[in-house]
Length: 153
Image (tube, rainbow, N blue to C red):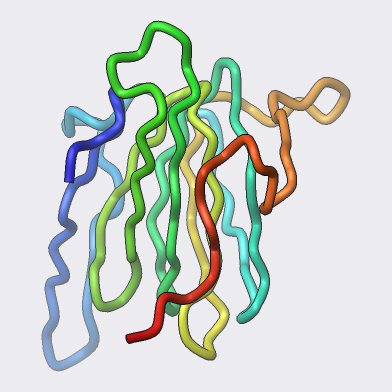
C-alpha cells in the first residue's frame, strides 16, 4: 500500500517470557519520535465509529493495546502528492504497530470484532481545553470517499 505523505508505520516487537510480555510503544531514538507532550488512552466500543477529524499542528502516534482497531486515514491536503489517498490499517494484538499520523490528515477508527479497542496516543501537542486543535466531519461525510461498512465475501 502506498502510504499517505508523512505517515509512518513501525512494527512493534512483543517480548514474551513465562511471566507475561513487554512491548515498547514509542522511543525517543526512533525516527517516528518528534517530542513528548502527553499520552492518553481512548476506547472504542464495538459498533461505534470515531471519525472523522484532523489537527492543524499535532502529530498523532497510535498504538492499539487491546482488541483490534481499523484505523483509516484520508489525505485532503492541497499540494500533497498523495492528495485523495485513503490508508486503512488493522492494528492491535494481531498486528502490534506504531502508526504516525501527520497534521491535516483526516483520521478515524472503529473496533473490529466484538471487543472494545483501546488505543494509546502520544500526540506532539498538549490538549488545549479552551481551543482544541480538532476539526471534525461526520463519519459518513460525502467529501471523504470511504465507507465504514464491513466488506463481506
